[in-house]
Length: 191
Image (cartoon, rainbow, N blue to C red; front, top):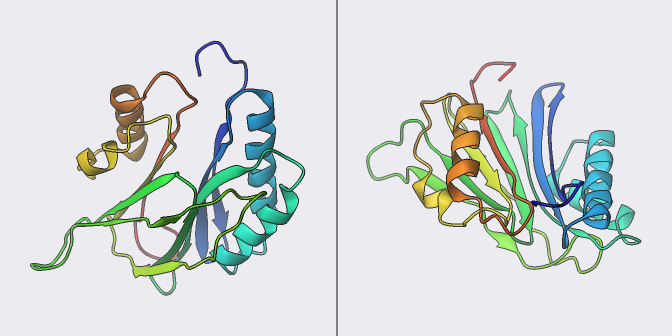
């Protein structure tokens, strides 16, 4: 956020044996305390274990009880099974854009985020698991970005960093910390 020295929005892309963890956290409010909570969530996620998105959220919840808390969305890619498990608590939005959807299948999937705050009020947790195909693109965004950017996100052919930069430039609200993360699944054993 303009005028702040610290961002309360943080992300991680963690290369794992056989997969990858992608996560975005938004510390409640903004400034140093929001940044502290979001950075702690990223530290907990780095430590693992990386077997379940539900486990990850629960570990973060316990570690963040002494902070103001975060809203958090994460995705765990399993390269061998060509699947992604994802889960969101709070309002970090997510969309998965299919590179090539078959006729009659949706071209995009939206993350269903459960209301709550990791570190304060954890809802019942239910992860979604979906198949992945090479070229499928995942986008997470915090509430400092207009929510309708997910519906407008169609550019799966551009480089993920260029897409993230464009979404942030065009859809940032300007009155809060803002973060967009775009990740593309390339397929194979190291996507």
